[in-house]
Length: 151
Image (cartoon, rainbow, N blue to C red; front, side, top):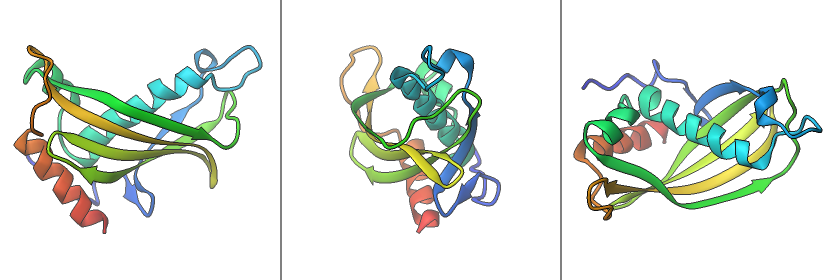
């Protein structure tokens, strides 16, 4: 699989970015983003990161290669509330490439205003045995390329 050049991916000074409008279903009765909705939004940003920044098929790892991409750590700080109708930008940056895990940081921004910051660790697992496995070579190569071109 050919990786896109960094110019083709949505990469800027914040790392990889992807946009998302806050929907009615993302909010509590007060119109504020429900905490759990951020988990779904962050996962969507990670899926976009795989496809657009790394040039890899997120779903293919799970369905075809039977490689799990589960979270073993997910820590979030909330700075400001987000509201229904907001246009958010999710900035994904690579923190660490491990033997069987990836450390990422994701920020939700409304313009230049940071709403939330998440640090997470994704571990690659065998979906048959559910044991941790080394990062697939294609994933390691794509992450290393992204890391090198993001410096």
